[in-house]
Length: 482
Image (tube, rainbow, N blue to C red; front, side, top):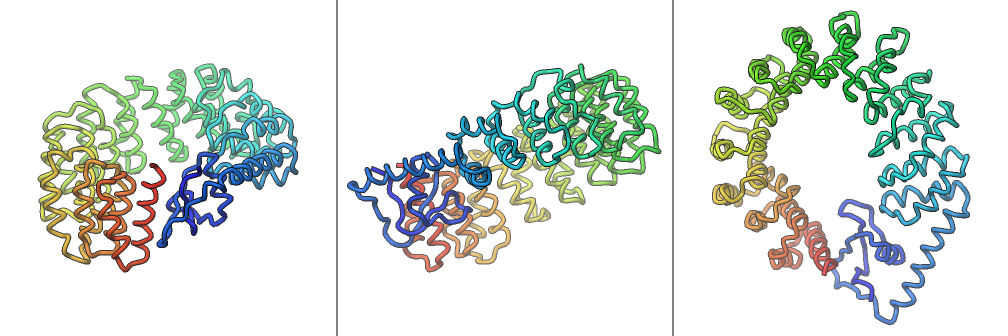
C-alpha cells in the first residue's frame, strides 16, 4: 500500500512550489523522492484497492519519461532535464550518457552535461575532453559547461594540457580563464612550466595571467616563485594580480618568501595587506604568530579578520589568546567580533567556552553577538551551558517584541541541535508569531518527536493559519517517516 498523502497540497521541500497533481506525488513516491503533504483537514488515505492501478500508472509515466529521453525531440529532452536535476532523479543517466556520446546539438549537450555535473555523476570525463577538442571555443556556453564539469570532477588523468588544447589559447578571456581554473584544481607540476609562460607573457590578457598565477600556487609549482615575486614587487601590475601572486607564494611555502611578504604589511593598500596575511598563515613556523598578533592591530577590519582566520589550528601563546578574546568582545567592527567568537568556539578549550558563557552575560555586547554565542554554545557546549541558556530564554519569553528572543529563535531554527529539546519547548511558550515559526522550523529540522503534543496543540488551537500550516508540516513529516 502506498504511504498516506494529503488530499490537498504537497511540497517536495518546505520552500518548493506546491505539487497539486496526485499522479506526480505518486511518481515521486516510487522514485524515492522525499516530499511533505500538509493540510488543516484530515489526511486522505489512498485506498488499498487503488494501489495496484496507481502503481501501474506510475510505471507507465516513468516509461514515458524514459521513451521521451530515448526517442523524443531534442527540445523535449532539454525541457525534461531541469526537472530531473531539481528532483535528483538519476535513473535515466545511462540513456542521457548515450545522448552525450552521440548528439551534435549543442543546447542538448549543454543541458545533459549540466545534469551530470549537478547530480555529481562523473562517468563521462573522456567524452567531455573529446567534446572540448571537437567544439574548440566556437560555442562559448557549451565550452564553459564542459569546463565546469571537468572542474567539479573528483579526478582527471594528467597531463591535462595535452588533453585540453583550449587552455590559454582561446581569444575569449572567460573561456581561457575557466580552462586555467580546471588546471588549478587538477593540474600537476607537469603543467607548471606552461603556466609560468602564461604568467610572464605580457601579451596575454590580465585575467588569463591571473588564472595562471593562481594555478601554479594550487599545483605547488615552486619553480614559479621568481616570477610570482616579480609580479608582487611590480607596482605597475594591476593590484589584483599582485594579490594573486601573494596568495600563490603563500601556498608554495618557500621560507625565502616570508621576508618579502612581511614587507607588504605596511603597504597602503588594505586588500593587499589582507592577502599577505592570508599567505603568511600557510607557514607553520612559530615566528608567524608574532606577525599575526601584530596584524590584529591593523586599522582595517579585513586585515584583522584575515589574521584571525590564519590563527586557526595554530598553538597560541597566552598573550595572543587574550588578544583574540579582546577582539571577540570589543573590536570596533562586527565582522571581526563575529570571526573572533567563532574562532574561540572552534578552539575547543574549556577556557574558551567559559569566556563565551561570561560574554553572554556582558551588558555591552550586541544582540547579534549574543545570538551567535547562544548558537555556538548550543551546538558545541550544551551540557555545560544548559542552565544559563534556559535562564536567558525564560527572561525574555514573556516579551512579545523581544529583539533578542527573535534573534535567538532564528539561530536555533536553523541549527542541528537535537539535544536542545528544552530550548525549543521554551520557545513554544512565546506569544510572538515569528518566534513560534522559527521554533517549529527547528523542531522539524531536529526531528524532536518528544514535542509532538506541543506541536499538535499549536496546530489545533493557534489562530494563525501560517503557524497551523507549519505545525501540520512538521507532524506530517513524522507521519511519513513511520
